[in-house]
Length: 189
Image 1 (cartoon, rainbow, N blue to C red):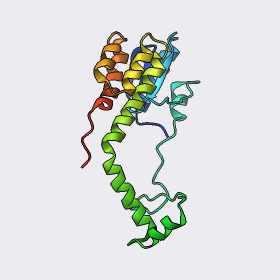
Image 2: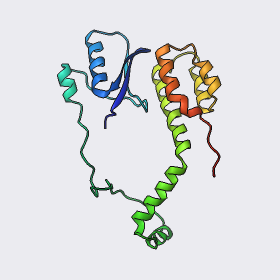
Image 3: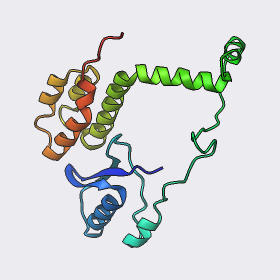
Image 4: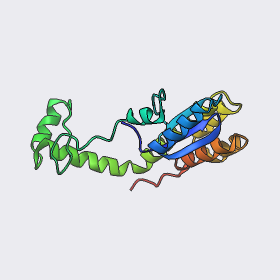
């Protein structure tokens, strides 16, 4: 599935940012104009590459982008998706004794765990997105290894000083992505 918001760089210069279709149009225009810089099209939030076939006219390129799917299978009101879960017999026995059965108990457990892990998940997701982005655009740059170590050590001050001389567009997006990775976790209650 394609992300709704993307970012594109031509070399280390910001080419476009915004809705997927708008960014694809900007990338297609740059490619058609014969840019010699490598172009990176990324999910703006996760920095995962977005694969688009740019062969043909702009209209042909845009037609190949799949539209967002409708509702998922499962119960329409909840959007429940069936998947296989493998547990030990004692886990199934415990789940079968819970009010509402195994599905309700599992949903409650996942809800509680996901609420408790919000801060840690946010920090990890930000760190991973920042690392993917820096690796994609600055993987060969001086200071990349040191900046990576500072990112994974959650040393925001050192990280910011190490990327201070990187190209401004790269640095701006990188610091935006990495910001939550340096937030301090609240103590567990």
